[in-house]
Image (cartoon, rainbow, N blue to C red; front, side, top):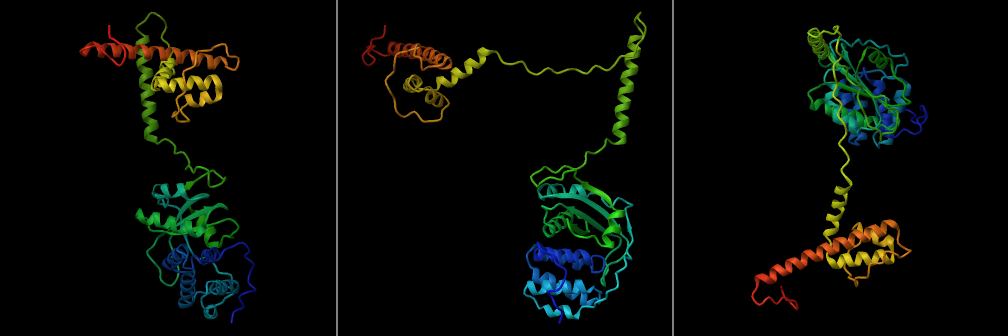
Length: 375
């Protein structure tokens, strides 16, 4: 039986991440479909099914693995409560695997990937780059259609490789882009397979950000197309010829006229009177009793008065209207100005209400309006 406790130390790596990194090392040797299915099982937290599928595929295809890879598979089988003795049936070969795959960056393997991943990359943390390449050779004992598109994703330390692999693969399939997604995190050595794929790949999405996942991800700014540049130059040349023809009709020597760019001035600041009217309109929403309470609060406690004027507490209690005392030393100049404004507003409201009551009294017979007589 394979000894599962003497393998290479992987402190800090969770069981899903250990299996994900092992699948990275097996890329190019194992079937693309088996790799994709195993990664989906890891993302769905079915680690036991994922490691059993991986081990079974290696055994069925007689795909050689190193002794270190055998021990790692046995350890993941044991940690996922699967049968660790399955690792005994693996074909162990200590010969360094030779990369026989051919990759090509021609015919735009990156086409459509940035658009398909736009919304996904905005929510995934610490994605550093996305590249794409065509693989022109089959992988595993069950080869698929060729060429095969391989999408290489690089993450920072805040990323989650198994989750990102599943999310990126799902978004690409939803957009109709069939590919094999390989996600690498920091601290993981790249195999010869990945090194060759990266060397021939084309960038699909790259960010210059190396900060935490709270940062905003931005793709590289696109350069203006050749047609747009030619159109802009044509417009500029046409305007220059028109300016020179216009200047030739004058007696002064003809000089090229530079295009005039209109300068848009910022909107003028509203007059001070308009701001006062706006504040008065807000004050006019208060009832006379609430205005009296505000005045009383300003006289007794200016800070409390300002809070009441800002609408923070509710005005349920009504106090007696005090006399206007602008000489109170506890009042600031701002408080005195507000008191003057409130008194003027109250006087205006009282005059309006008196006029309204006189009009109502004149329209009724008898003219008696609760203790006063209309003129």
